[in-house]
Picture 1 (tube, rainbow, N blue to C red):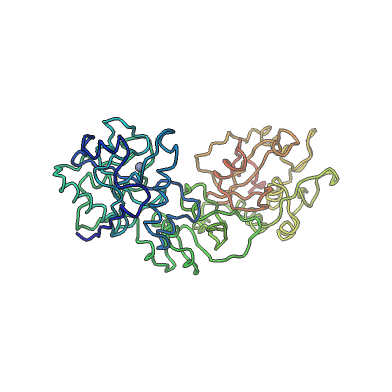
Picture 2 (cartoon, rainbow, N blue to C red):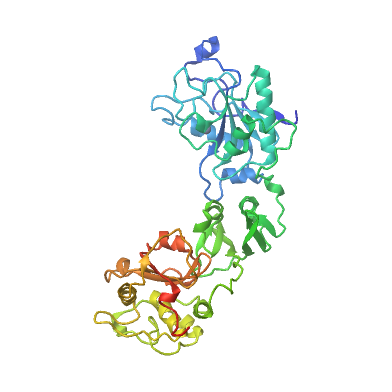
Length: 475
Ligand SMILES: [Zn+2]
């Protein structure tokens, strides 16, 4: 046995015995008996939102006793389980952390965990509740999995159980996410016989948190786990074995850059992560994360697409400018940059800004696509004119989120009225998953993916392939 046992029964709030179904009955032994081999695994549950007590525990800045004291008080809170009844202690018999097993309640105590009911057939009544103080999205270390394996195997042996079949995750008893990552880290492999005392658990994603090296190469998971104070050098962040992002430490503000907490970055679906953003911890910026450029696919992308896109990229950082009646008709300047002539230098656009359709107008001007003629209804070069144009020419196709689009594809939500929410939007696919666009929040930017724009900024209705709006005559 390589773990140590620590008895916390007289240090935690409440009593070691349980008041559920009556103290007297428990003392006399006339209560549902624990069934040999029944074990339920729990975790601490709450979503992590920045720095919390579980994060401090991971980094050795809070003790297990502090964590369990808080949880016991929470379990004992009035009305937590029933308006008329208040349990007299933590609802776990044991807690496992690193190389320690903490005894929290008498093993025979009836403990009532969430949603499992109070009937004589309650699984929790007849099982031993084993808890691990981790939260959603945070797998535990290899060492904790090893201790859990040894402890549960010993407990089964001690009780004379001949099978692991009744070692369950809380979610297998009632509707809950509990025990989160421990389902795949422990419950399923243990039951399948793939975790055994004295054996390396292998393949577990958890490291021992304080020991994760900061050597310029980390997985996204490690980036979220390591003490933020140690993140003071540039780091390559990998996902699924691929170098996907670069982290650069910095605390300087970058106006207009999207702001993500380290927790959001850890938890997000890949397609929702902006290509370039500032990253915060406990509300303070500590660096920037940039998506590593996809290898430039210069063979596949024609020159007449690459040149206008390069022009627009050079204008990134320009502010969003809205049209106001005092400005009069669109012209060769902000916000529309409309003219049937060569475009100004990209630096002029960057310094003066533009509205969303100005990027389409400028892209066409780079390619000498002279199309800017007012329609009977609209000035050339605004979102309504673009919508009318691509629909009349029958080159607009119904937008579908989950398909591959070539660089230079135009995405459109139509103008339906002068109110801000109805003015529509246009954007152009740059490369990979990101769009170049001008919007109120970020100005001219390529920080958003197609999916995060569609879901966050407003739904696109149509797309237009580059050859249908941007191709020069004879190009
Ligand atoms: Zn649970």
